[in-house]
Length: 444
Image (tube, rainbow, N blue to C red; front, side, top):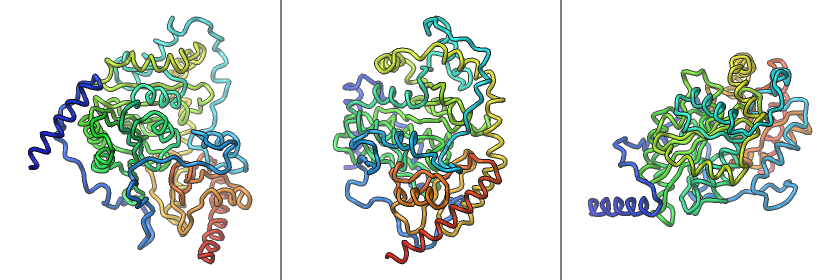
């Protein structure tokens, strides 16, 4: 019986490949780590007997939209970005920024406004420079206006008619793009208790819960994880990519926070797996967000489909601006200087945040090794939108409510301030948390 079911699954995969025009990768020999979803991580500090917060409904694997009552209009696909533009920095201590402050404009004073067509020199030069950094062929790279543009282009290119499993908690754009483009948007849990690992067995379960098992299955995630800062090693990326390959799909990862890691420790998804896709930018670790410098890099098995991805970019924005691309080539030659702020904050401010995460009595937390963010769970609190508003009013501190990542009861907290300012901000945050948690307990 088991052998017959196996042959059935193989025939379904072969039919899916024929319909989608894809050549399916052979089944991987890697064993899936079924224990990953339950094995505790030593970097996680939990309260004893904490009730689980994962959804327990029968369709917990199905991705569902989540709104924001304070949005400027209802039904928005990306309300987090409206909040980020208008409400994320209302105090003197914004702990809401996941990247470094903006780089000084003086860095680019020598550049001129360029009006040549991008394909004449600026576009191939930028894509070749990115390829050199990632260790891939130039034809594997497509330039985009920031990582956000890369995420949208990949979704338009790959997701129609497919199963797409999106990590949860997740950056809101990932969920919104899957809901907009995928035939079956699915939820892939990443749990605080396991240090926000991403289990291959959970990915297989998500795919198998879909109504149509004949269509391609892609995974959509971030590494390091936004919002928690957890890093997936190359071994785990290959295992996840193998689950996707078995279903004719790709492992798509936004790798922008890898830039905070030492160069030797960076794990580019496009290098880890032949069906891997890396989305990157120079925004978070180098303070170049206003230049909108991003890219998509394809694994070896996907490079032959580069023209399909380029077609999606033509549909969305045609070409990145020539001047921006020229600034990107220049910036890539100055990355050591531009990355100094990220190194300084991780050396001087991150230990302060780490200590707070380990000792605050009101939270349960995973402490990431690199980056500026963490995603603690607040004990006894579900409505973190309300908590974040109170922190603005009473503590003069900005944080990001967990609801924007699909995880009520959590806060994303960053350490992008100078050490003395960060210490004072966390002290005010702790005092307000204590009051809020106590009041919540009294209400129950």
